[in-house]
Image 1 (cartoon, one colour):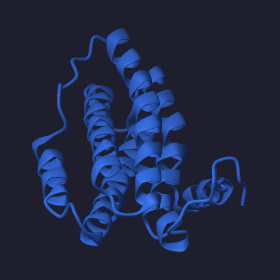
Image 2 (tube, helix red, strand yellow):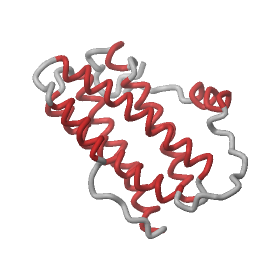
Image 3 (cartoon, helix red, strand yellow):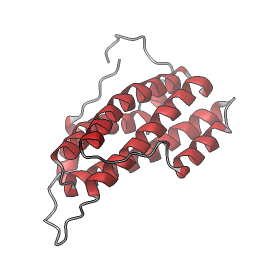
Length: 183
């Protein structure tokens, strides 16, 4: 299993001011935490579906491996989101958003060839960038300590996923190393 250094990501986030607390808003948004929980849940559902789809349709072992990683990690992240949602009586959507479902269908239409893997990686890059923006907004504006804690713990996982799909693992290592092998 490849390990990804997270310290440079944290340092970059601090330099860019992404982790710095925002100045208090004149009017706090009481919906921020609920919006974060709902959108995070939809994102997790979408990533789990995409990961499973990669297991069925990817042409490279690497994309299949990344898909398994997304299923595993987003299942864990979603358990934390669902717990906070229960505690805050936040209603969660039952499916990914229409845009997320449309994206998965567009990628799935390319199944059967290497174009699938390329489209899947691009879609995952876009989705993980959007998720990081959602997380960063919650870290700046969230009021519920449990919701912001879920965002804080999700950030390095989502950043690692982005590293994997944006030219990291699959482009550098089209054939993943056996499990247990450290790089």
